[in-house]
Length: 431
Ligand code: PLP
Image (cartoon, rainbow, N blue to C red; front, top):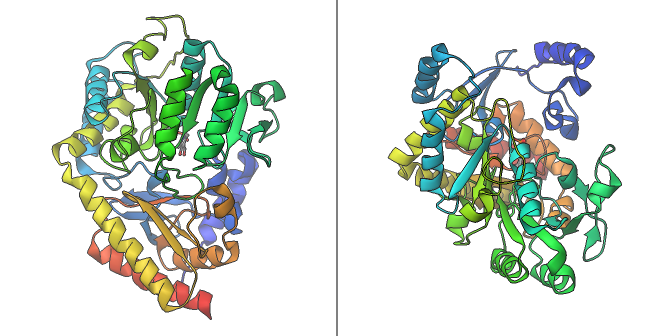
């Protein structure tokens, strides 16, 4: 019998010491109205909680674990590295090696800088874009998440182009005012904005495959439009590939859709599960960063040898065996086709969206192209699906606005088990 007694107790204690009992809000399970399992360990496709429940994991630490949890080669390289010391705050050979590997996957990243989180990568990329162009305004898209820095925590109001209002108390109005939000996949809105004030805009930042309103692919022509208007008006195009980086293809969304951004942000997989992220791009722009240039950016733990070792080991495996990308994509296709088939069997309106090895099951009857579409999905059906799965050992992201992920450790037996539980869940929803 599924139970979370120990986790519930642990959660109550954690709430006394940490806001909401967690160190990142989505982990609290508030959006699905329950308490989170507390995790004790993970291996391959599986994750285990302190009540001894075992789950097939489709969260994968929110994306990084494409090789599965505790990959033996990655763990061995970490075990070898740790006795040499955990931080030096000085240059190492490892960093150049990682930079070379990142560039081999994404040639647009001619020069890179290592940071500690996706938030830092996007925040720093924006500063570079502003410093380089001498302009303050930036454009982001509704429903795209780029971390929690002030300028990017801005929500859209109604209308074609909304000058930002802060999404969170504590974000100064003056900062938010320089963030313009537009609907995702709306090329006309982008063109209209750039026709009007394009010469005052420093950058467009975009998830080229959106993952933070659920998985929403770019419509044909959308990324091309972004590339064209930024080029025409001297603005910087920033692809935030923190999530889709090694998921949309081996070379991210930029390879899959053949668009070369000026700057790219990577996180998650690039650190193989350790706190590591990267931003980089054209030599001309990146060499504006200190000490090569005047734009300041720094970090005590940036390029940390343990984090870099984890990233290097992960990228080395992916480089040695590029069929991994096809393997995880094929598994994800099989899974998504299964969901569609089962939902149709029970007449549950569902649209399954997938790019590479990321996917979302939307409880709706029409394709989700932007945040408004995502927000119109049936939350109650999502919650029923989620809870049935969790209590039967399938661990999905606890929110309808998230992507799920597949690893190389998800084999046909995991897919079969997952679809058998999905079958029960869709049946329950249809009853
Ligand atoms: N950008 C994207 C596309 C993300 O999905 C995330 C996190 O999920 C971030 C940036 C922020 O990364 P981090 O949580 O490492 O700060």
